[in-house]
Amino acid sequence: MTLKLAFIGTGQIAGWHLRGIAGLTEHLRGAEPPFALVALADPRAEAREALAVEVERMLGRRPTLYGDYRVMLERESLDVASLLVPHNVHWSIARDCLDAGLHLQVQKPIALTIADGRRIIDYAQAKGRALVVSEPSVLGRNTRALFAALHADGLVGTPTMLLDYAVTTLNGGFSSIRLHVHDEAVHTVEQGTTVCVDGVDVGSHVIRHQGALRWLAFGRV
Image 1 (cartoon, rainbow, N blue to C red):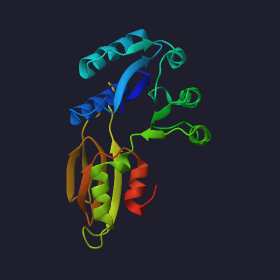
Image 2: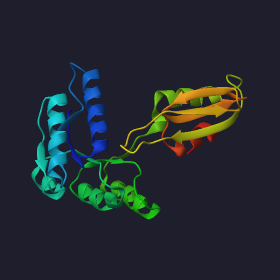
Image 3: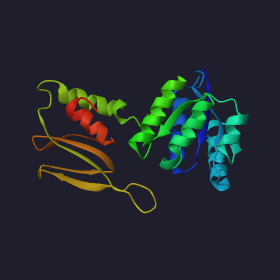
C-alpha cells in the first residue's frame, strides 16, 4: 500500500526528507513504494516551487502546490503529513492534521514546551493516529550496534566518557572538528557522538540527540 504524503514546510530540512524518500524508493525498486509525495504546502512561493522541481526530478512526479496547508487538507486525499515548519507552530498544525484524520511525522523537536509536546502526543492517541518524531537516532544501526557492544559483558569495557558535539557554519552546513579524548584518541568528525572506553574511542558516528546518549549509557531515554 502506497501512502499519500504531504510536506508542510519546504525549507532546508524538507530536502533531507525528500532524499530519504527517494533513497527508500530506490532501495525498494520493483516493489510498491511506501510513499507518494503528492502535495507541498508553504506560504513562500519560491521555496515550494524549488522543492517541487526536486520532487519531480527525484521521484518522477510533480506534487500539487499550496500556499495554505489548510486548503491542502481540504482538497487532497492524504494519509500522512510531514511537519517541517518552525517549532513554535507544531501544535496548531499537528492538531489540524490530526483532525483531518492524517498520520503525522514531526521534525524534531516535537515542540518548544513540554506542555505542547504532551498535547500533540495525547491528541494523536485520542485520534488513533500514528505519530513519529524524526530523527529517531536510537533506532539507527550504528547506535544499536554500539549499544549492544557497550552492554555486552566484557566486550569493550566500561565507558568513561560520552561526548555529543556538532559545529555549524553560517550557511547552515556542518563543518568538521578535531576532538581530543584523554590525549589518546584524536578524530576528525562532522557531528555526532564519541564513546570513550579507558581513554580510547570505541565509536564515533552520527547521533544527534542527547536522548541517544542517555540510552547508550543507561539503556533508557
